[in-house]
Amino acid sequence: MPDTLKITLAQLNQSVGDLSGNAAAMLAARERAAAAGADLIAFPELQLIGYPPEDLVLKPSLVERAAAELQKLAQATAHKGPAMLVGSVFVQDGALHNGVALLDQGKVQATRFKHELPNYGTFDEMRLFAPGPLPEPIIFRGTMLGVPICEDIWHPNVCRHLADFGAEIFLCPNGSPYEIDKDALRIDGVAKRRASATGVPLAYVNRVGGQDELVFDGASFVVNGDGGLAVQMKDWEEQEVLTRWTKTATGWRCDRGEIEQQSEQYEGIYSAMVLALRDYVGRNRFPGVVLGLSGGIDSALVAAIAVDALGADKVWCVMLPSRYTSTESLVDATECAQMLGVRYDTVPIVPAVNAYDEMLGPVFAGRAPDLTEENIQSRIRGVTLMALSNKFGPMLLTTGNKSEMSVGYATIYGDMNGGYNPLKDAYKQTVFALSAWRNRHFPRIGLGPKGPVMPENIISKPPSAELRPDQKDSDSLPPYDVLDPILMGLVEHEKSVEQLVAEGFDRDVVARIERLLHLAEYKRRQAPPGVKLGSRNFGRDRRYPITQAFRTA
Image 1: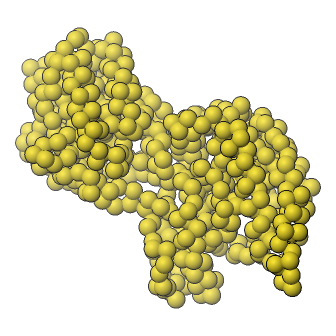
Image 2: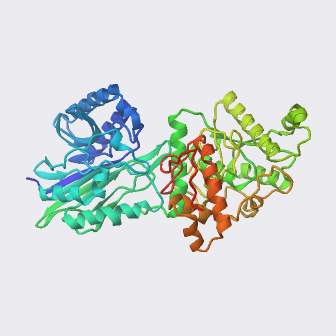
Image 3: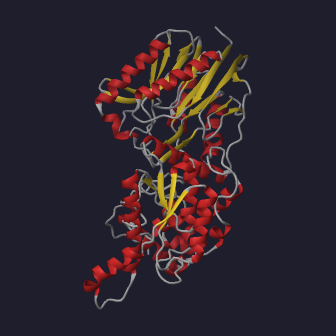
């Protein structure tokens, strides 16, 4: 029985449904692990089929192909190199399971199924999978490996059960999406507790990359049985790390290895936006993106994210001035485009606005101009940008932030047009903070310029939609330092009007914001997808009925 083990943790990206591509990537990683002398290589949750598969996993043909690909992977282990711990889907007794297989010596040596199926927030596994029994360890070269899968370690019973049955090392495959401050929760709030409570070291291997509205940050790690951090892998990048294990008188212990510095808060949020957009555009095979660059902070930040995600040569910015567009905005947008190095065009919308005035004049006779005319301008911009997308192929990015989307301060079929919205889960104050951060820092995974990416005036000037003379956001909304905390209370924490009033907010303001929040549900239901950043994004986490009459005030 060996007293040392070498285990490669392979923190890889994956493409949902691309079974052959995911398998090829795992085999390539196995070859690299073999060259490093690994005994075993461990991959993230459902690495073979991609995570989360949603209802795609209900297709029998996908399950059949996954089984065939798994057999091919198993056969590859007959040749020199490490065993593989691979996540996939399995059918047993007619039930579909999320599980892992140990592949070694040309065969599937063992399978284990996920016991705790998450069914909250972004997760919906109970409608897809059957829970497996409490798992028992897998014997690998004389060592008892416990394999709790993702959610299994968030509940103490699975690790406790594995330890009671003799598990000496926990290998935990994960598909854990990014949320702000979640990395500390994974390590300190969960992994260290399981390791310390059982005395069993835990290796946590997480996927990296974007999948629709989710993004995975990697940040895999190992904690020893005393709770000490032995290995910390990078966040936001694919990485393979060989971990070295030694059996001591008190059990297995991982030798201290690489301890990578994790991104601080704003770099983490920004990197989430960048990586999510990069994978969304790339996997949906768009040649690039186009967006309206207004001279305001939201579109400037989206342009910067796009350049860092895709490179300046794949980003097309368009100014669509109206009669209300200020010279300041024209100057700021032009300078921003120059700083980013993107293609920049100007397409005035005045002729189209005049055409609509003439076309609708007889029907609108006797009615004073109002929000309708403002929305027409926004919709003309939306139609124009979609025309460019249709004609030349780039995906249209929309630029509304979470504060605006919460209260409906956005024009449906206008500035909400687009295929993806990087700011969908970012409140306005976060937009300000990220813009200031990016002007002073360069993200490790970025492809854009290393200096400032927008004029400081864009960050400091009062926000305005510029759809009527001298318009400011503050004409219609409370200041963002008031609005955003109210929205955080209503959306993220489901607080009532009374609770927020007790915290010091004005009752009339809170009641109005709650009313706007509910009225805008129909708009959000038709909004494009965007990356999840916080604990409760619109769509995957917060699922409200469009038609409902309940209010807390």
